[in-house]
Length: 354
Image 1 (cartoon, rainbow, N blue to C red):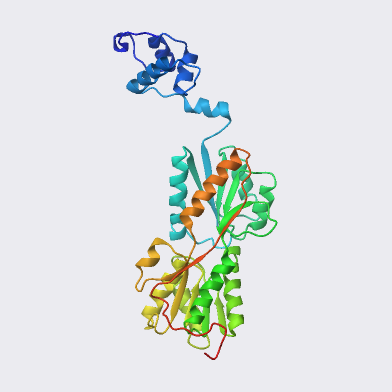
Image 2 (tube, rainbow, N blue to C red; image 1 turned 90 degrees about the vertical axis):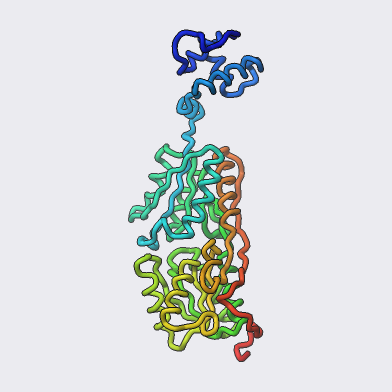
């Protein structure tokens, strides 16, 4: 190792070879020193790393990735086979993507985001997993593509999905018990006096279908009326569609279970426009507990999915699967977050006469 001032050495220092020349060692020693190898003498390693920092020399990351057969990229895909007009700007997607991005970038990964509209030949996921451009794939939502995801998971292991878990499925999933969440929402409204429920949400996707199943379970047990309106999530149409749903109910509804906070917030807007008072005339429960839910007027009662914890679990499970370690599915328990869109008016949940 050269002990003199490296600045006095002739020529610029831009490459590993330049560092090796100035430090008086081989290029291999420089490479190992920058990688933190214990094979390099501590004093020599410190000198080389300090020299590299002062001259802005970095090891060739691409070459390192080629040697490890890793790209350093994680694919994140949102399939919208059931709702083609929904946007990535949907508040739920933005909330989940934000935490995923934080977790992935902190672990040194880059992100490749894809908004997939599944086509008839069902090869949208094959194209992503087989591209060779990613080390693993995160799928946000199963949409109506459960069977496609199952088929790909049979041969592609480094994939984790945010969604609903079915007993015996192949693909690794992180999500909430959606049926329980729907039941908690309906039972909450029933105990506060609701006798005519409306469920707002398109059930083509498995997660929303399970939420409706939970609402149906509670309504049947309490012997109260339930109407389902399959609301679409296009930003341009959602409020107008809610108006149609409200008008479709034979008698005035007094309780709404919305399949998402976005739907619930749109319902609040439409109810206000029609002169309904919330919660006096109609009570509402959303689903997700997005940050915006506490900011509505009145603040929104909702079913909480722990999105931050779930996103961290997805990244951890994907990392383990990339390393060929075991990583099983995680089903989180939903939690009722009571705010002002549902009032405290109690009766027994299974006594229809009150």
